[in-house]
Length: 77
Image (cartoon, rainbow, N blue to C red; front, side, top):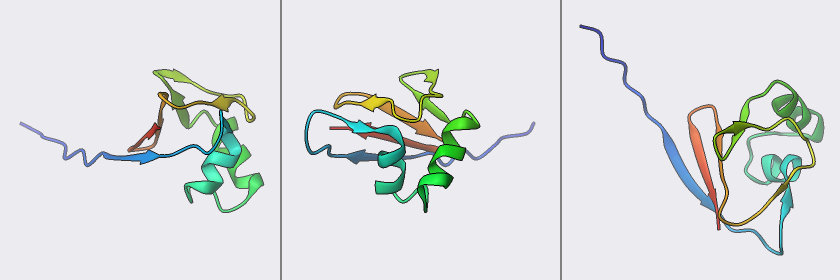
């Protein structure tokens, strides 16, 4: 029998204001080093927003939403 060790991380991110654009969030989290890197992450479909792939770079991410990027889950508060 083969068992995979899934080490999934979860973190919270507090939004200042009503929303944050997806590419700004990726940079603020340190998941993207530049705006171009953030755009590439989104364009490649690596971001799952509340269970669905998010391809809009400037999607408005609001408190209460959950993002999954690779093995990291981010809960917006």
